[in-house]
Image 1 (tube, rainbow, N blue to C red):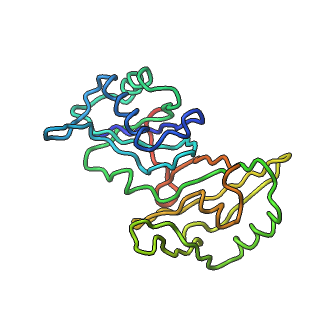
Image 2 (cartoon, rainbow, N blue to C red):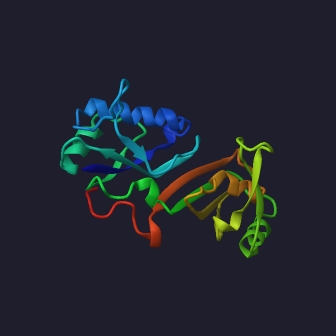
Length: 223
């Protein structure tokens, strides 16, 4: 069986790298003494993966980890064991169990919801967002270090249909969804660059990940 968890990357660990985040989860799994499955070879490691990598500096309430188990375990018991071994900044919000032949979570993720809080009101904000939303095509030079030229040109509107915003005091809150395809996705911080907004004073939060047809990543399970 596979154990699937919805976990967080809270504000206090937002600047922890993806690799260190994975290491923290793996150490917690070892401490929990759950019957996790290990790979074969000279350096066996726990068989687990995340639905999607998260950029440094981004808070998330919707990270999904999938853990292969060597023997069946009740999700409730697994959650109890893991909650006592996870470090600060990582919390379990939901859990479910599926068969080993189920599609991997990474292959199921099709849409990411984000909220971005800007600490100041940008000049011409309404004009910039109106232009973005009304455009049929918006080309952006996305970083691609493996390419000789160091970038590739992509159409942002393939990934993001619309950006919504509201002003609260001196802050601006943006919300938008980013589509995920087999060949890749688009970074939330790059949406800000397309809008010509300052990324240095932006607090980015991932709110949700969805399957096709806006279905939740965990169906059933416990919370």
